[in-house]
Image (tube, rainbow, N blue to C red; front, side, top):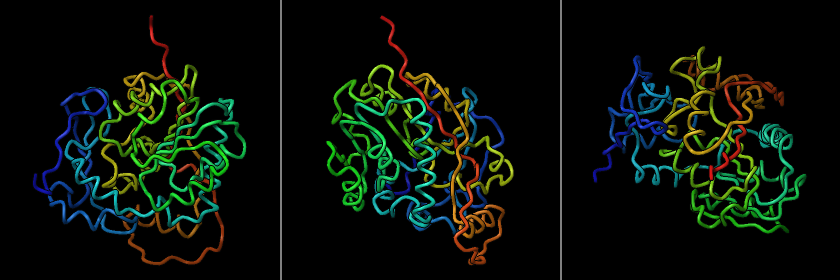
Length: 310
C-alpha cells in the first residue's frame, strides 16, 4: 500500500453512494495532496486550512468525506498528537466538562459501571469520581502519555485504563450504566459498528452521553468552509437529525439533544474567530483571564439502548 492511497468511502451511516451538491472544500483540497504533505497540517489550530472535501449523503443527509485517510495513516497521525485541547487553559476546560456532567447527572443515578472513550487526562471522569457512586471504571485512552494523570483521577477506585481505543472486549456485556464519548464520534470511520459494539456493554436503561460538533449551528453557517470543525481529523460531522439517524442505526433511542456551553479564554477565542473569518492573526491583544461561556456549535446528545424485541 502506498502512503497516499486514501480510503474511498460510502456513507458510514446508511451505506448510500449518492451525493448531493454542492460539496464543501478548502482552497487546497486534501485529496489533491499526498499523505506526507498532509502530516504537517495535522496538529494545531492556526495554520493553512486544508481538509478532505465534504459532501452530503443523498440518503440520510450526513455530511461526510467520501475520500479520507485510511486506517494505517490515521494510526500514524494519532500516534503523535499532543493531549486534547492542551492549548486551552485547564480551568476553562474543567468548567466546560462540568457543564456536560450536569446534563448526565440530570438523567443518571451515577452508579454501576462507567465507560469513557477518549477521556484524555480525565476532566469529565473526575466529576463522576467526586459526585458519583460508580463501582467500576473502564477508560479507553490510546495516549500513554496521559496515563499518570488519568490514573490519579480514579485512584482508590476499581478502574481499567485500556490503550486500545475500542477494545470493548475488556468490558463484560451489560455491565455499564453510563458510557461517554466527548468529541470522539466525529473522528470514527465506522461509527455504526463502534456504537453497536458499545451497546452490548450497556445495561438496560443505561445512558450514552455524546458531545459532537454541530454542522447546523449558527457559527458553521456564518463561517462557511472556514468553520473550525472542518478539518483533517473529522471524516464526518453531524447535525441533530443525522446524529439521531446514526444512533437509531446502531440500536439507540435519543432522549435529549441540547446545545452546549463551552468556556474559552477570551484571547484564545478571539484568535480562533479571526482565523475562522480568514484573518490569519499571529497575535491578539492580551484580554486577561476573562473566560466567557458561549454556545459555539457543539451538540450534546443523551441516548439509551433500545429494547430488543423478543
